[in-house]
Amino acid sequence: MKKTLQAVISGTGVAVPSEVLDNDFFASYLDTSDEWITARSGIKQRFRASSEESTATLSKLAAEQAMAEAGITAADLDLIIVGTVTPDTSCPSAACWLQAELGADNVPSMDLNAACSGMAYALTQAAIFIGSGLYRNILVIGADCLSKITNYKDRGTCVLFGDAAAAAVLTATDDPSRGLLFHKLGADGKGAGYITVPAGGSRMPASQETVENDLHYVQMRGREVFKFAVSKFDELLECTIRETGIKAEDLALVVPHQSNLRIIRSAQKKLGLPDEKIIVNIDRYGNTSAASVGIALHEARESGRISVGDLVMLVTFGAGLTWAVLLFRM
Ligand code: UT7
Image (cartoon, rainbow, N blue to C red; front, top):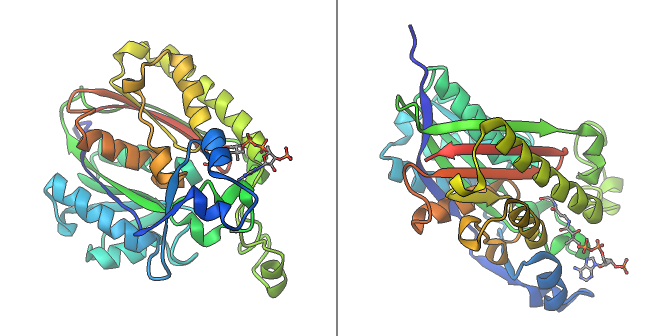
């Protein structure tokens, strides 16, 4: 009989573009200020990809780092999943561009669009593939270059987003105490209009008119998304505690989606967590969409904030609307 395997995170990596935009950059041409951006979002700077950089090029750098740490090469990969809403091309997937860059010949490769929940959705899918006994090593990426679909005249969105890629290698283990112990994914398509890129898909194909009307850029109803996020985080935390029986004090670290410091602080208050048990890096990256929780996870591992045996919770929400909570034993 096939053994049920657990999926452990055996390597992580991060890549960001070299250009850094601080808040004064936006204040130099928009009606905004460092004070407003810092107070309302917690963001101090973010990275922006150049015309040479894309979701796949950043993903490659993050992937190489994660694979080196996991002690594997492209030849050992069984599957590549890229969580993104900004693939290099709408067809083929960013995962296929990445696969070619990595030289991971013939490895099945696909994108997964769950917006800011993309990496959490992809990690879950990868863990289930590994649990089935089908695959041993899966490369999971959360990566977005939101700058490529951002309207730099819209102060309600452009100050928030940053570009980055995060990678994690999931590897099979037969230690039942480790790996993905609990997950809950969800979506509510009735909220599709809250965060959307109206044009460029089959609903509204790109045309000169859509470009002239800025419909190829991301649009967001910030206040509504904010309210949704705060209540969804509360609900996810409550549900995890109820369904798993864990207590907040059992958690070594909570890794929340980094979209707004006020949303993160609200979740922290709900759980009664001290600062050392929740990771915050939004000040340095902005909202990096699918990369967000992957970057925070990587930084937490690198800095020694989490290590083998620790219980870690990832919690995300994003366009869709989508959401996810994952509980990992590292
Ligand atoms: O990962 C994807 C998920 N997205 C999110 O999590 C975003 C969630 N939403 C938010 O983070 C917040 O709603 C924002 C940071 C986007 C906005 O903060 P807010 O406190 O909710 O502001 P608001 O939308 O209620 O707007 C308050 C005022 C408005 O002016 P009026 O109508 O009161 O005159 C906005 O036009 O702030 C104005 N405003 C700005 N002012 C200066 C909006 N953006 C800016 C800006 N600089 N960049």
